[in-house]
Image 1 (cartoon, one colour):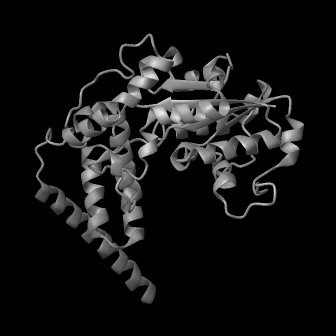
Image 2 (cartoon, rainbow, N blue to C red; image 1 turned 135 degrees about the vertical axis):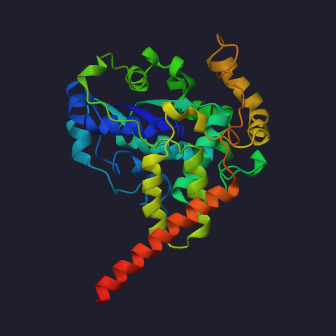
Image 3 (cartoon, rainbow, N blue to C red; image 1 turned 90 degrees about the vertical axis):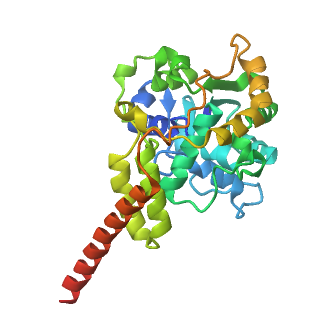
Amino acid sequence: MVAYLHIGNVKTGTTTIQNFCALNENKLLEKGCIYPQSFRITSRHWGLVEQILSPNKDKNGQVLKGLNGKEFKAHCDKKFIFSCEGIVWEFSKIEYIQQLKFFLENLGFYKIYIILYLRNISDLLNSLYSQEIKNNLQIDLAPIDPNMHSKKHIFDYKWLCQSYASVFGIENLKIRIFEKDEFFNQDLIEDFLHCIDLEVNKNEFLIPQNQNKSLNLLGIELLKRINQKSKDPNTIKFLSKIIEKYFELDSFHSHLKFSLKAQLCENYENFFSNSNEWVRCNFFPHKKELFRNQGIVEANNRVGFKDTDYDDIVDFVLEIVRLKNNTIKFLKEF
């Protein structure tokens, strides 16, 4: 059997790709591909990560949770498509990658292609920070020193490419640049279809909306303060959904694009510059630079808001929520 394993990177349109595949799984079957239910949690194959990281393995080094044997037997003539950015996110050691290959080969896959999208370091850093705020994560996804980043390996594109090449073979790597001008027909979905060697008309498929957008400057500052000021997780979740609805970044409000401090971004750009250059030389020798040079723009001061203004807005919103909760509680007791 043949597998196309889309491993990320994080913040490179993975949710859009996964939703597309899940939404069109019947159409993909007609085209000779399967986006299997096995190992799938919602629309991504997080179960593959669990297979490797789970401490409850059987004597063959495998866990059976999520495995649908009938699905593999019924579609052994089709191309299997797996997608989970958690593979890049969680597998910081080459041993995990080796175990993943061993596991897939035991399922019957003799040919495994790896699809990996790489994003400009500063853009990735900013997008991760936005996700940190949205999810109220208790980890620092933008430390000043790149060496101190808990997920340093996801920025080290040389390490990623070398590691997966050493395990799966460099000829089986499909390394893509996450930039519109680099996509096949300047479209992410068409680029992914091209990666899985499926030459079809995109219009034959249902196209999901873009998912998991970053927050704009106002959204970042508001939600960051809500996370700090409110200790109630339900309140944070409630307000987070509203903020995502109204304060996601779009082309009409580009002046509100958030960016971390320029010096911080430059630290990461410089730290991983040799890594990027190695990838360029080995996978994109025709390019002068791995990523389009767009400069590092510190956008935080474009809008004339002060810290006290944000604090006042958040205090006002939290007061509304407290009043709402008190009213509901009073009515229930009444």
